[in-house]
Image (cartoon, rainbow, N blue to C red; front, side):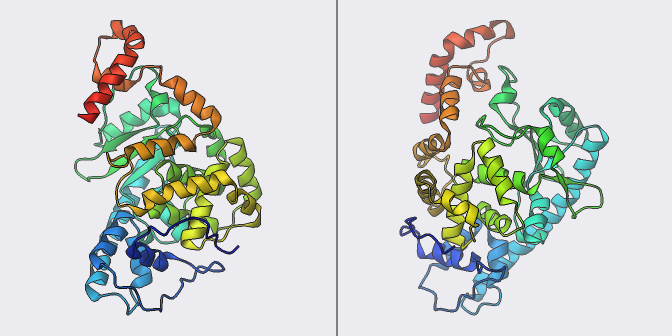
Length: 386
């Protein structure tokens, strides 16, 4: 399929366009396009800032290192980033194996969602993808047991939120940090944070694959489940880091059962997210789109969602920042299905752990959070604005 040029990327700075040129791949192979034409007069400091913001310096450095178009000091800076990332990924790989072994030996089934296994699975090389932490999915019933295991291994919980009002349904992960190794681990019990439909853990576990990275068995989701997770995660974050779109480019080039994937996406109501991801990847990274997905990415809704995310890709600002917060909230609401929008609006009436953080009450008075909910919510908003 030829790239669809209906997405408006005219606001992209030239530094971002050069970075994308070095990330692109020939649609028929994994060979990188040779960037031979003279580069525009760009700000190389801004270029480095963009590469680091989007966390794509391993791929960009690998593809740029033999180019004579890049200043030597820029290549040296990228080389240092590349080396540091390789060390980081090796450290994460060792810790990932240790954690998965401990969890499994204590009866907890772990599925690794990203990190070193994803780098190996998609890029074939640990050094070609960045990761700041480990994301491990477990059954919801095993949260407390997993926390005990992490604590015994020296980890400390980073977000001790009040565990009230079915908090497991309001959140989807807990972050842990090891003060000695400086490694962060996120324990997930759901793939998504918005209560959308998703495969139950038992179904994901049945379709799991074994990573070739470690000697002790470490498991990751099946190809189709991994694709759904990656597009859902990227969409939820508005694709503001192109690292996530590079993942889509890689997984779309693998032997995917697209018919089975489409059935799964229809079942879990995320076909529009898959269409958004492939449309962005096709336009920005020259990702080939299979025939079965061409009609899906041509849908008006998918195009609108893809165009909305262009704003977040362009700016080196995190979507949750004050400057982008309103646009980001509108974008997140547009992502939701009709069912999810209804559930979201109803859920706003139900107290959450954030209310308990803002107004701590003894357990015997927790029932008061229901009538106080509108006032506590308004108070929280005023505090945030202040």
